[in-house]
Image 1: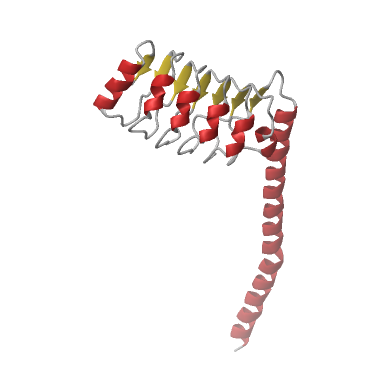
Image 2: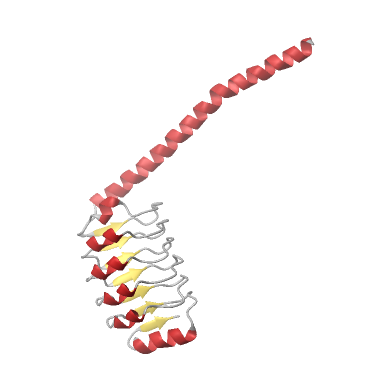
Length: 197
């Protein structure tokens, strides 16, 4: 009986000790996570605020969406959002009317928004390695586009409007499940373009 009582007292002592230790650990961890997110947000804000000549590099920052201060930046000329976890581009990208180079490779976007049609100065787009399944017809309105990298996606058919890209020098379609006859039509329509497949 005395042994059992002793075990119960020891067990209760251990439980009480764990009670005081465990919540402090959880609170510390939660606080650390909050600090890390805040630090990441501050780094992104600094990168946007200190952009020189309209260049913003937010590659590999762990972003899941495009920051609001980037969406509102109508003077951005070069934007690198590669190696993040961004799942979609909002319609506010229409504000990027001075954008010339857009890099968003290795994210998780399924498509681009129709509002890209307003990127009248765009020359290069790299959205490779996203798992994209389609491309908006509005891509055909980007008459200044010279380089379009769509490699390593899941696109099996491209909009006919792609043939309107008469300034296009390079079109990279490698790693997409494109049907051969569709690919031949693209190559025929863009005879002055280097089509990589």
